[in-house]
Image 1: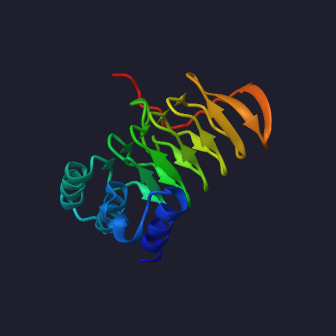
Image 2: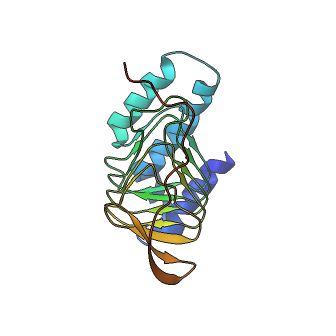
Image 3: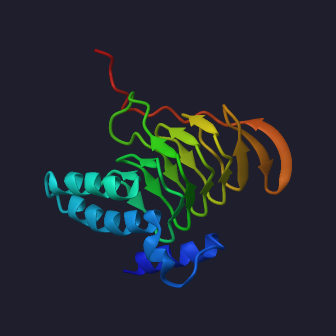
Length: 190
């Protein structure tokens, strides 16, 4: 329940157009409310039902959130259409995601195969993050950035395709992202 209150507060904190009970009309809010219930059922080990409910949630909101995704409190999706959040994704506290963001896998990993986001991460429209990469705390990822198997350190702004660090601790810079450390559970080619 506390997470839902924080999710509602996140709307007012991040969207100046939000007024009174309009939060109930935000598809991102409806999606996260449903997801928190669906995730609970998923963690109980109930077969089929969580996946069915997540498909209904996707149809109703335009956001595809796998029942296994772990999402911290204060989560806000603005204009959520086209958002995809994979099964092993972990999202920290107070994260903001805009429409058409993909937090997906590469298809080459078993086990943990989707991104992990720290706290206070902002992801712009159309950004794509693929693989079991890690994004640190207090990170801004620019619109249409593309990150595959590269970790993003804390306190940076990244942008571009492929994404590069353009600001670190408030100072402009121009650096490549570090490659994600090799994961032991790579799927073997058949």
